Length: 412
Ligand SMILES: [Zn+2]
Image (cartoon, rainbow, N blue to C red; front, side, top):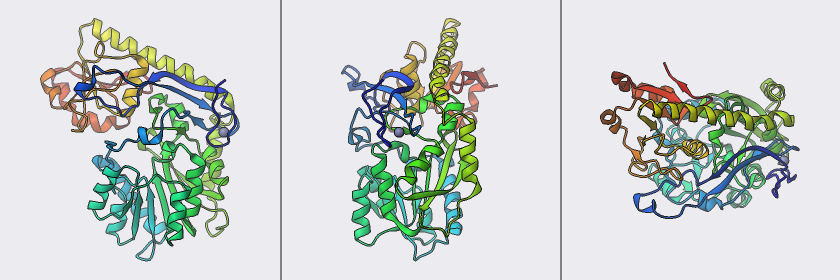
């Protein structure tokens, strides 16, 4: 039993999905002079609603605090992600017949990583982005960007000025929204009568199937199935008429929405197929959700067994990457410098800092050549192929790659 209510349907949250203990905010990387100070830890305990099946974290901190002004994530840093966005632009230009008379609006537009491709093709764009420093980078690229959190008020203000979207999109934002109803209600206001919504989010089905519990962190308020998202959109007069499965972030969905009244876009067979797939996987019964916690514990035990054995055998273990998901994993498992000496990350914003909670130092990847660790534990496992390619030189001294998820595995 908890004191919390479902952020979509307001039913009391009585069922635990996964309790990962106490954890600091996963993007709260520490500077050397902060190591001696107290750190704030929050419960990292996800619940499942037995009425709408929304898996969710209750709020313990304001979004302003979580998505701080110097939010360090710039989407443009990943090559594979940019290729994904460029391909999406090409598809949508054709599918929605977009041109110079159309309006594309992106929610959480970051540094303009995606809208730049629509702009190149001559389609008017508008970004909405709450982090001022990130929005400034977009403006410099010529992407008009409104610095605001998105919801009904922001949508209404734009609609009143005559700005509405032919294509309204948001990638990896729906899970980050504390007030889901205000957000989706705002989308209904901002969408033209004949407009199309697309959104991408990590698929709860993949999280459960592949034990991706480390993607649970405070910035992610919701963990979404198609079935639940369809209910949320339906409650705001929006119909999901198509869905695609994508390989990004360990397995994501791209949903297509429209106003309920817009019969010109018929509901595609993929919608019924997706709901059937989720029902067969147990996502509309409580048992599958409550069984998840056991698989999580088992993953922790196996990872600790591996690391302890490696250290007892005198092996040196380094981490690779300093993603938010790595912080969930390391804090939950209680892994510190006793088991992993340090981690290496390409981002200059993170080098010289320390992981929150565990205080593992973050170094530049070049240091791996000097230290010659026996094992490199890949924390952003969703990018493992890219990383194994970039770091293949560790094999020169017999170094091996290890992934922690879905189960600890030494890559051959
Ligand atoms: Zn609910």
